[in-house]
Length: 297
Image (cartoon, rainbow, N blue to C red; front, top):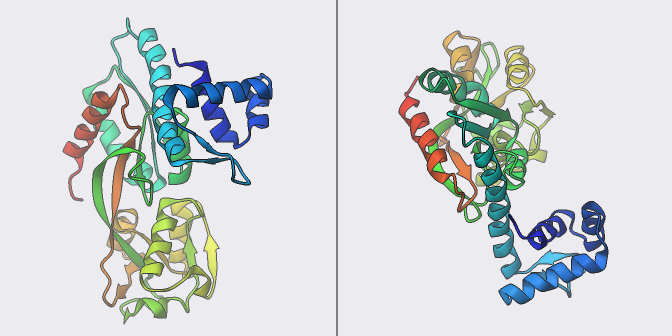
């Protein structure tokens, strides 16, 4: 059982307020203060900067926060393991970003469930930012994500490296042309929503070329790959996506890769979970199964 004072500490971190944490936990604010003081005395550290205008974790507080998240997650998992002790199946709850959930995992999950028909699998498909929040809260066990994340805060293994390319309609003015990345900015773009790994990577690539999103002539934000591809096929804009997302459309001649001078970006997909998880061995068993099914298309 997790110490109730650690629950209080995590609630304060999530709410960024003693008062709001007290309300959420149905206890008094002095009780919250007492719990935090107890933990600070126990671990001989100050967790919050009391001179800051807003409630801010100290360096020691950030370290404690990440380990407290793992303790909370492990506590939940112990209860679930005990509930399932008499059951022969495993249960996997994980998240995947849209690119991975739609274009990588279906075949892998099909093979997995054929090989382990008694296991239960639950896959949540959301953007990177949302999945990391759910991982922190223990709502999922691990996530396969793209884009930026704090590598010092999580345990992770490289899942794959994927080409990240620009595409346009077959009859677009850029089709068959070789251009600089600056020249693309004069055309309308259709991109993913803020918070998605695909969007983060696009903005990071622009930054590598000392460019910014607001330099693009027109930007439309769409949260669905099928919609993005349809609009690009109609000639309503260009986009950057992973090659695997548009492979079939390129093969069928509906979309064309735009040749860009001095460009050859690849980006990582990563398998991410909380450090120190008691189920790390199970997660890595699934990771290695995925790797055994990752064959080039």
